[in-house]
Length: 114
Image (cartoon, rainbow, N blue to C red; front, side, top):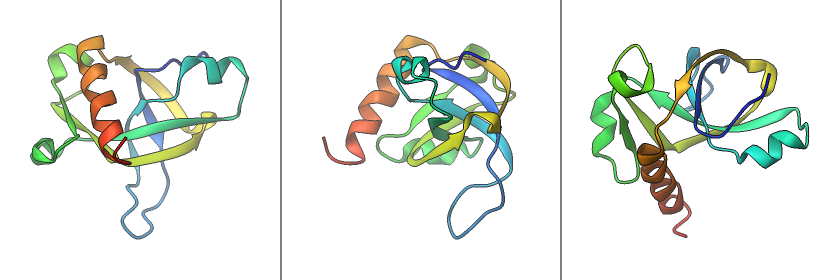
């Protein structure tokens, strides 16, 4: 499977430990596509949640279902980043439009204050 940046996938994250998100949920690939070409076994993702109240948190990005293929309106939680094994990515949902990825990138830079 070719995994590209901006791809939305269903993933198996595993059990919740502390504040770590868990279960079968959508994720957004934020790792650059050139890393996939290196055939690494892992991929960097941001967790996607259907809790749209989180869209008010600075840096998070609202993802409308109508343009993403997600089953409902959702939010990219830029504070919830994870490295997953590529085998944890299951079904492809869709691709995040470039305009929304620009917002995600802006949000990602806020987390470490870059």
